[in-house]
Image (tube, rainbow, N blue to C red; front, side, top):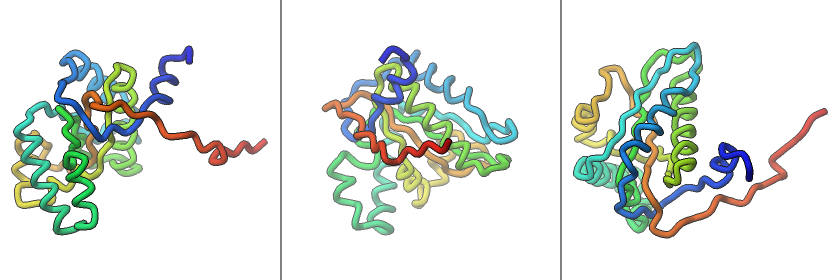
Length: 185
């Protein structure tokens, strides 16, 4: 494909099996800056962009999230553990807390941000997984401590996260379901 943006979109897939290799700091900065360029309802920018490279903190969050999952969603626990936990062994992630103020709801704006992060990462050869399950880490007894350690704004709510790194075994994008497209003339 000759258009690099379309090529990044079409080649992106959800990575669930990461190596330990950390993406370069310059690439993580570029991805975070791409996230900052996202539009938002009313121009409110109701989010934070938090790049997490601290392996010990990610491990503690993963363990807390798995404990919450065991309590609230036990049917998903074994499959999640089998793929390496909530964070699938990713060496880093970007957490996107939501701030109040978006006229269409901060979750809508948060979705735009995490999709932009995933596409920017793919364009740099970095694999990703958009994760709502990462929110489980904040629902346990250590949730407020994690918010503090990550520097959440006082009025921020948990949004979404994007796991980043390099696949142990590269995947491929899902097949396009062309019958989902309608053209009305």
